[in-house]
Length: 296
Image (tube, rainbow, N blue to C red; front, side, top):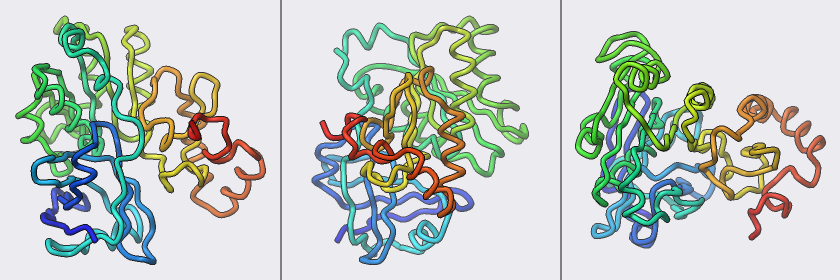
């Protein structure tokens, strides 16, 4: 059992939980995820790690109520426990393997949309701990849905906040902030990391491609099973079949077929759609097929 030592409602329908999981906390890196299961009958829920404390042996997760399982999870309180809490899973962020001195020479931009702020935070925090300041853009629909702003302020070199309705700080989409920083403020970046809803990542990549700015995206929004066996997170990257949970969740955003991935998301929501995808894709339908790198 994995004890919940902190349970907090951040904003409407978005929760933060700190869970005792010393073995995971001791070995995880930014970009990886866990799979949580409430009880024996509970659904497996993949969630990107928001923070970790190696000394305390805790993992922090942030999730939004999107269905029955996350609704049940939101009912858990401090002192309750998860039946299963597995990780770290997935590949760590690319920059964690780069020589620090080389990384310090780069100017990095992070773009977070909605709940995507949670997986961006540990990446920016890791960089700060290694003496690297990064610019961060946080976007949300309204001020009331903005999360982790105070935490992000502590680790970001420069923080830019925007809301779709203009209820707080800037008004507009995150893409408008990117354009303003580059074209009006003269900012120059070597690499961008964008995490948020699929549609947001698609348009961020469309814009950064125009600026010839390499961009990494995290496809955790399309994960369901978290092991590569269900076929939900199958995606085409540079013309090749990949699976977000075993090959990612981070990929070169300029090579991701977002339109195909979003169409699959819609189909996967119904049994008829899942059966169709399984029949159409055959042996390449899931991550255990040997064609995606998930078995290596």
